[in-house]
Structures are given as C-alpha cells and as structure tokens.
Image (cartoon, rainbow, N blue to C red):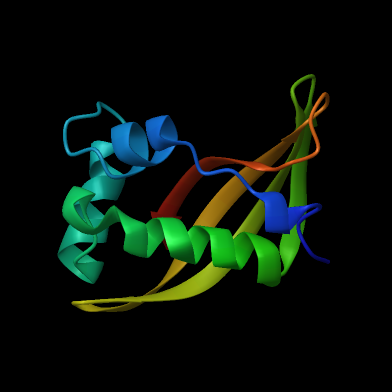
Length: 110
C-alpha cells in the first residue's frame, strides 16, 4: 500500500533541520552523525534527504504501525545514495486525525 496522500507529504524544517540532521539535538544527533558519516548528507546538503523523503512518501510502499489519539503512523523504507554510499533509510510518517497530508516524524539509517 502507498502512504495516504503521500504526494502531499510534509517535511517540516523543524523536524529535518533541527532534529534528524541536527548534530546538536540531544536525540537527533545520533541520526545526524550517521547520515553525515555514512551518506555524506548533512545540513549543508539537506535537500538531498528532503527530496528523497518526499519522493519515497509519494512512491514507496508504506506499512501502518501504531495508531494514537494524534493519528495513524506509517513506516516507509527507501534506498538513498549520497556522496559517500548507499543505505536503506527508514522514515516514519503520521497522518493526523484532523489533517490528510502525512507529516514526517523521524528518519534514520537502518
């Protein structure tokens, strides 16, 4: 199955720049370190990851996971080639109960 309304997916700067790719975020810095070390993707070329996430949301298979009062979460895996290599990225999306466009929750290298 595809991510519902995946072609309208939202990757907020707050989530991508200040969490997933932030080398100083208390939790996100481990993700940021791996994206940089393994793929060569960091804050200076964040568009590589942003575009890959949006492409995957629109085109890759999505697997429903948990449902909460905030909405339904989905996992979308995709292969990403960066300047330093190719790895599988797991992205987690939520479709809010009050909104149809999926929003990025997190992403990391598997």
